[in-house]
Image (cartoon, rainbow, N blue to C red; front, side, top):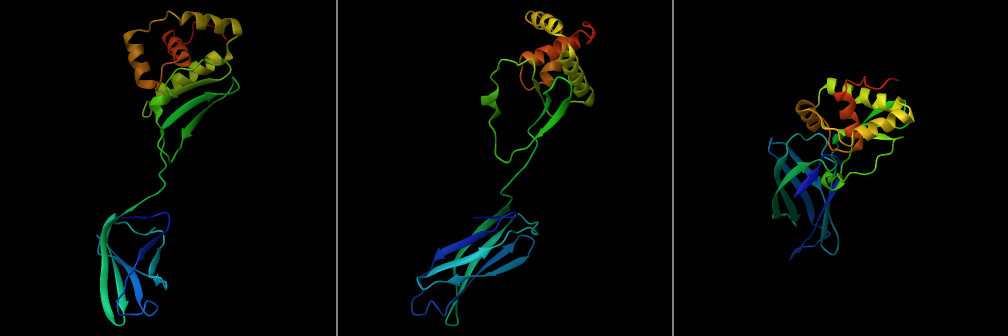
Length: 214
């Protein structure tokens, strides 16, 4: 069984009590955590025997596990009809999956930090798509050095500011361009995927980003 730190839950079960009135019976859920903290939650029992206990978000709980038990008192008689181990988790998780450099207007580059609570299967998204020269997108891996980030950013800015003629020269040169072993290892460590834009960046860095004038 699971309870959550960031959202409430309702515990529900059907009770059968023989020889006692349901309306005069009481129920409560007891949560005993591994750090010996105990929480008690009063429940309700309907005329049809449905027992419900509302459990709020357990924001202040640091323990991750414990044991739950349902206590029922029917006409002064005490019962424990149900027990179970439980864990405390967070239902929504947010983390950085990747960092992107995006050039939308050929002038400014920005870092986009991504985001999602739901798992994303990146393996199905690695197919290379035709590059739009007016929108340079390069996905870089987590953990690369600031120096490598600056090199990528500088290369993209350089290409974005080139004339159409100079861009055409670069695009023609990268078709048969083979980087040195050192540059190739750097590119493999830096880029998530190999596409036209990452090849442009690798080519300009290989050339010292000085081959073509502004």
